[in-house]
Length: 426
Image (tube, helix red, strand yellow):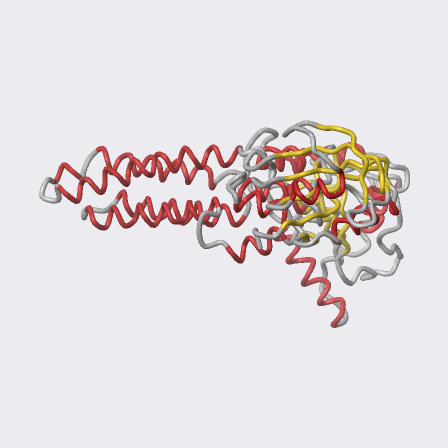
């Protein structure tokens, strides 16, 4: 596939002020010359007339940029046309490129995949790029950018260098197997120190709550005001509100951003002994969501609140005189007047931030954490080894996990899933 020359629209869907059309592959320069005439010097831009490769009809006047392998985003010869962003212009240029033998439209994510396969980025940076494209909040953008710019790759390189040093010392120990000191002492202590360092990274907050949203569950008994609170927070009627107990039979999830923090605000069925089979299913689901919640907003009696590390107790319907004073530790909130809503949202945001990685901290996703954990396990086995052959084998197993972490080996199925997330032209 890498012998093909590919092209695609890399900017947003037209119409737009500017459209960027990319070409990458061994014939990129020749194909671009067929349309734009002479190309500018590498990494330079020049204005050229774009003409159909066969009819020579004028298609547009565009800014043309040339990049020579390997100093390009894909590691191949590349050319970019920055033309006018009308649909007719874009279609005409793409149609002209399709008339050139040896060129074909790119598949989703194929430009980035070529960058990976040509060593321009590793798998963790590619995952960061995918997250950056999908980022919808400021926190998501910052975390994805840190990954895409190689923050995790640099840390992995440090670990790999330390692991290679340990492996070299272990291999030397094999040659001196009769010398107990060859394996005991400093080598085992250094293995233990590296395993501990990896464990500390595994204890950090993961990236999933930041990518998927912090799960904020609103729970309590029937008619406590859960659905009204959801509607007041979102500013629209997302949940049905009636005086009939058990109206909410299933959970309703609403994505929101609080201060740049992505959350999934979830309304649940009232927790009680259900009166029919459908409501019982809703109550079971609500109970599971309460246990899974990253942040729990409780609208029932404070004494009945589940034991949760991030619990916000709410005294609902605070505008009604019969509700009385809010119990100590509960926040009075009215979905009708808006009383207490700003304070509640601030409390939710603070609790949500506590489960997210720090502003400048690197965070692992599930795949990365899996390989790092298996590497840590292998190194932990090595630190307890008394046979240099077993120690060296454990360290080789750890190195194999790092190769899968960075995409050097055994990740073909991961690559297909990852690059399928990218749009055309990326």
